[in-house]
Length: 195
Image 1: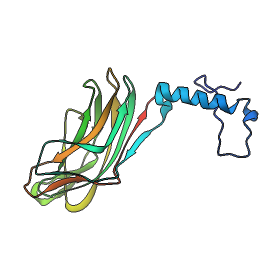
Image 2: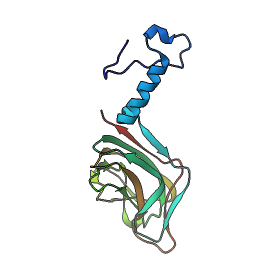
Image 3: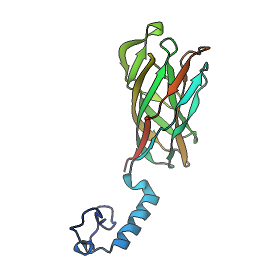
Image 4: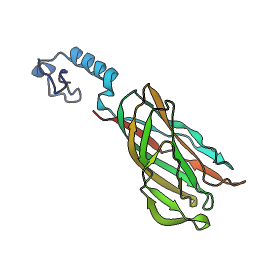
């Protein structure tokens, strides 16, 4: 029987019609069972991604709002790479505050927003914020009115003592009576376990 570096059976590439499972000496049924077991144990290094389909809006508030779709499970004691592509609009004078919420307090995220720095009432100052933040810190990034902008978030998530979730959250940087911070469809968030 053929095994991989993790002691599991070699998986048969089902999309290649020219390869017979018997060439590997592994029954297809065993390969599928082995894959299922590894997914349950470690997520097998597979990236878990969620894409935003609806608009989320925060109006006249600096209270952080949990995004309705950008949320993923975090397994206890697992380490992940974190990537997000957040498409948003925010008023020039109000900007947008972003961050992450964890359901397990011992879960930690270390991340950088890679987004434009706000420049008060004049819009964006052309500088990109590459500072490192934790889930306890929520930086404000620049808005440009109705012009959609993007923040390319990168980081690492350290799973806590129990399974939980990580959820993107946001609010206006400064509350405005007739203004809104908006996270748009097409935004996405992903976690990849580090083996």
